[in-house]
Image (cartoon, rainbow, N blue to C red; front, side):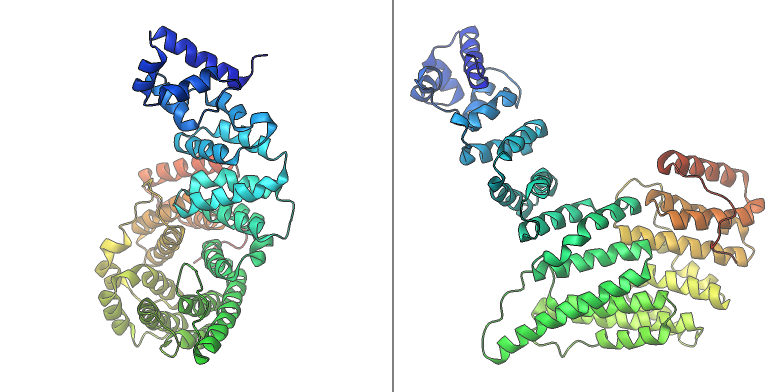
Length: 471
């Protein structure tokens, strides 16, 4: 009976004859010992072929990468038993050249024994640690689908890795990723829960779901404080605390807990309560066990606190320190984008003039090109989307309709890019209020954007949407 392993050997023999080789000359060209080739082709039973040997012979015979891979799966399961050393080498090679069809076939065979999920998970973690995130995903998905212990840490980590890899600038896709991951996040090791909460906070911010963001900040604070107390006790007992093994310094998670809560409260209009949380991260020098990197993070929080206190004062309507705020922004250019977002929002709420401020930071405000196909961080894109909307409102109030419409269309284009349905609706509603001031090219661009919405999102919008922003 001819099997897949027999077929490979027959094709090798056929190729050797067609090239006019002896086993010796073929061995020299392929870089494989003649005796090994003889054992592979003539042994009884035939010697197994490693994936490296198959690749070398394929190259010597003039075949492309991946030659005979679809037949090689049987070579990994000699006598119906899984040879993990051979399987692992084959799977790694398949990830290198994108033969996901072969990966799927091997995984299907392996999953006849669910205990193999342990080995699959180990391989996925190796790939992930090497930065081969996309290559690791089929193996994590295999663990997710086949792990028999539903409360295992292995399953939770697999969900977390897939979640991290799934987050991009598409709001709807991110929502699906969160729904899938959230039931497993509390089963992660503590260090991963910290990182997961930061990732969730970013997505909640992009959703503009302030209640969930507030809850996320609470969880981050509780967990980081608990870990800190354990580490502090170790330090005071002259013991080395257990390594956190997280992506960031512990002080970052603690400070971010308060910063996240302050951000959520600010957007919920609870300004005084937000100030109380800012006070908690404005000076974290007391945090014991800080590394040099940790000390640098503490200095960053001090800057964030200054900027965010200025923001809250503006939102309350206090413009007394606006000039000092502008000087601070000039000294800290990274704060221009988030600060301009609040300054424009406050100007709309309390009707004060910011023309000179817009002019001063014009190059940064308008450096984002919505049509650029590059993938920006989702938070970055979201901030620009909201900033352009606030600027549109500001210019419409100032009766600078052309400029307002330009900024509104920028906001709409970004909202479509990240598929933020609420912001798309806001932009369309505001456009309908001021469409009579649109220039011909603006009308044409708007119509193109609407077609994009209907084509990609497959949803229809009404110009009279309840709850949309108005002036």
